[in-house]
Image (cartoon, rainbow, N blue to C red; front, side, top):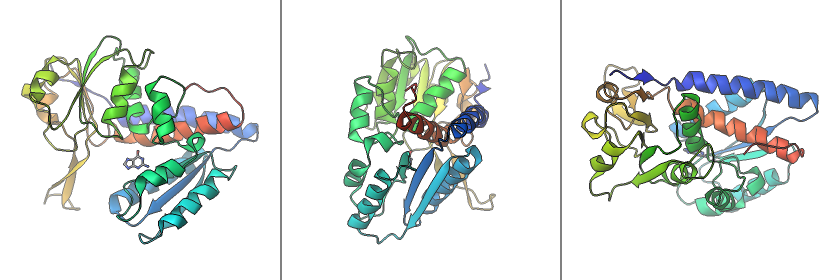
Length: 298
Ligand code: GUN
């Protein structure tokens, strides 16, 4: 069976259209959602992610306060900027692009962000709330993965899910979200990682395989069952002399071979990627609604 491709760009565009309408309605009530963006240093990948976030804000009518800081900024200066944003009523969400340059204490920075403005969902307060099933900002990439599955008609309830990768940004929160007793969860989840003894034994059993290992070809066709749903969170640069940039982007899955066995699969690029920014915008709009005392969904 050749898989149907899950078009992340289209799902993201649908959600962004919904958000754009919502932002327009909020503006009629005098509410303008605002996102504070902080990029430290000049890592090219981080720079392009941040630029894409700022452009999306503009497109949806969300105010963005953009801050590009030199790599040698002190921890104190960075914390002071976050404090200023914590106290700025125009800002509903704060995004500090990770990773931070060496010398800055990432844990301390994330702790400084007001949990009510933590639209990345990385603050331990929000992580804890998510784990116990309380209302919290959900981290953008895992929440985007769940939206892609639900909007593609995939049943999560009772599904066997194998997650490959245990990062704080994707694997761990995704596992926690998928086991919640609610419509975005109710799955049976196995989290595999670099110390897993027999990775293929777990992925072969799974109805849904989610690859978030950060390594090309981590999931190959012999490791999945017929009809599996595959979500590829990986973004890896591999050398390619035929490309102008000298590289191309691939995921963690051997896409060409696995798509012949899967029922549904995400491509890289154009799968999970567009959803991450969309969920950041979603959280920023939710935060603005919370700040204005309007009931919210998550
Ligand atoms: N770096 C890679 N992914 C993310 C993300 O989702 N949020 C932030 N702040 N930094 C990242």
